[in-house]
Amino acid sequence: MNNIISIALFVVGITLIVMGVVAMDSFGSDVSRFFTGSPTDKSVWMFVAGILALIAGGVTTTIRMRSANS
Image 1 (tube, rainbow, N blue to C red):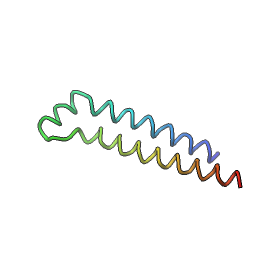
Image 2 (cartoon, rainbow, N blue to C red; image 1 turned 90 degrees about the vertical axis):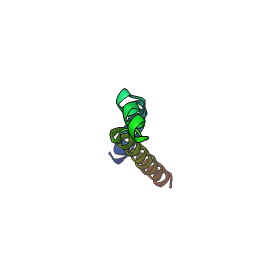
Image 3 (cartoon, helix red, strand yellow; image 1 turned 30 degrees about the horizontal axis):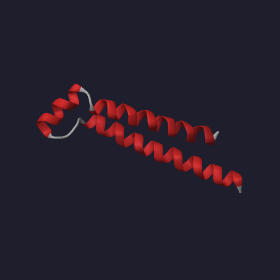
């Protein structure tokens, strides 16, 4: 069960990273970047949350695999 959650976190992380990158290339983000010099907060938070979920899923999957092999 825990392994499924770890893999799901990994997949959700990849999905959020892709969605964050797509949002950074959107028209709204271009307008925000024009006026403020940075992309929209939503795209940045999706990207950051994706990285954190990817790391959490990868670390927990790796820990589970190492403990199963021991």
